[in-house]
Amino acid sequence: MKVEQAAAGEPHAIDALQRPHIVFEGVRKHYPGTGRGAGRSAGEPVHALQALSFEVARAEVFGIIGRSGAGKSTLLRTINALERPSSGRVLVDGTDVATLDEDALVALRRRIGMIFQHFNLLSSRTVYENVALPLQAAGWRPALVRARVDELLALVGLADKSGAYPAQLSGGQKQRVGIARALVHEPEILLCDEATSALDPETTQSILELLREINRKLRLTIVLITHDMAVIREVCDRVLVLDQGRLQEIGEVWQLFAAPRSEAARALLRPLRQALAADLELVAAADGPEAVAVLAIGWADGGSQQGLPLAQLQVLGPRARLLQGGLDCMRGRSQGRLLVGVPVQDLPSSLSPLSPDALTSLQQALGADSLQLLGHVPAPAR
Amino acid sequence: MSLPPLDKYLQAFLETLLMAGASSLIAIVAGLALAIVLHTTAPGGLYARPRLYRGLSAAVNIGRAIPFIILLVALLPVTRAIVGTTLGTWAAVNIGRAIPFIILLVALLPVTRAIVGTTLGTWAAVVPLSANLIPFFARIAQVSLGEVDGGLVEAARAMGLRRPQIVRQVLLPEALPGLIGGMTVSVIAMVNASAMAGAVGAGGLGDLAIRYGYERYETRVMFEVIVILVALVSVLQFGGEWLARRADHRRSIS
Image (cartoon, rainbow over all chains, first blue to last red; front, side):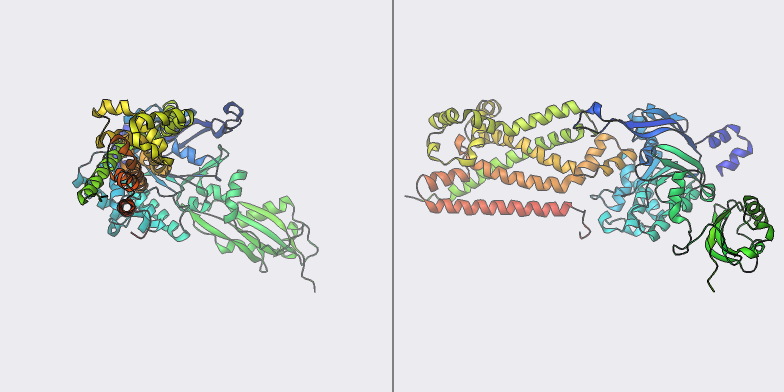
């Protein structure tokens, strides 16, 4: 609604809304060497982050993915100044968070909620008291605290658990309490630190759905870090791939899945990628007309249309077999990869042998964005 | 050969309670304050001041070590001085493990006089007893505070709590089960230590046991005092454990 109002005739409001929410400018972080026994100067400084510059837009779900030790946790913590960059700036709404004094920092942190992998709930407090803590610390009157906490426990679906202690809850319920606690001050940013990594797949799904719902309902900017590509696929709009403190690539999630450009991204995607059965042995050259060529056909951007018309595959002839693959729709874009086996003699004669030119024309005929010859399966012995 | 009348037992019991109770209260309050300062000024703490931390930590170590240092350096002359002048009848006592505390007790006599105006009586014993326990309890409490998950402090900072609020509303409540356990250990140690406080005429159960049980060969008195002490220590131990369980919500069975 705010957006429409602004569009109606308040150019300044548009500026404020279109300005990136969080800006990273050349953010570096290094720690002094850890070699204590050998003396401090002897240890090489550890470079956790190396000159990162990027922006996070308002109300988007922004994912940061990397292996453990990639620096993503440090990066996330620079947003609410739990970590200070060694150099460079982090701007939230145009304000450099490193310049804030304690009072301003407390105010900033109330605008930024945070949830954690291990939930970090106080064991000495009930669910209600955990969610109430940030409000009590801000000096709210008890009646207002009660109303707000009840509202949030209802939002995360735990209204009936307010008197329980965290130890009596399941992991998913604990994370819901963590989310409720992070939202009490109606923040504009929510930071998620591996929020689903300690949860089972089913619970992960429900927590991710809740995050999506919050993002839509409250128009909240979410920055999440994870090592799990499935989480990125599920909730994120854009993603940044971090490896050894360096930005590997950044872009729309569907683009990353369709065509990863960095080795780090390919490595992270590998578990999700469909591959050929391990017992299928491929040879480089066809040993005869009955040999089967195995092709990988990729669709990177399905455009506005969802799915793939099967008629497109008829180019491959009647004996082509679908070996492996799938199509996926992410944020309204479909993309995917199919592995097919086609007898060499069924391919249009101009295509055999399968030269690069031949592959290009076949790719065009299929309407695919990429086509790759993986190898051949020898003709079955008669 | 007369056994002490019942009210002697009662008086001795109350004196022990008074000494142990008052000293424990002082030592726990002061020790906890010291522990909080130690914990928060440690490197990486909420108010990280590494130099202050190292200084305080060294002071606590010295406080805990003083009796032993004196014992090592000046065992013979000090013992002779104690035995020869102030203590008289203690010469016969098998001092054993009590020596360090007794030394502290005597070493602190001028301080005690300045604080409570006398070096004799039950209250006089409270000063060295407290002084003895403050660094001890400070270390126990520091360990309990250190066991609070750092993630909780981080979460509290992330949700906009100020540092004093984090100490009051996160660190202390989360460390409470451990703190109660430490208090139990300390109060019981205090009951034991107070038995030695007869040296300054403080009375108490230990004094009764030695004067009647040891010096007059009334073995029965000794045993009766032991029974009372065992009962007192058991009550304290069970009470402490019960309180600690009440405060502990970390396990799913509440």
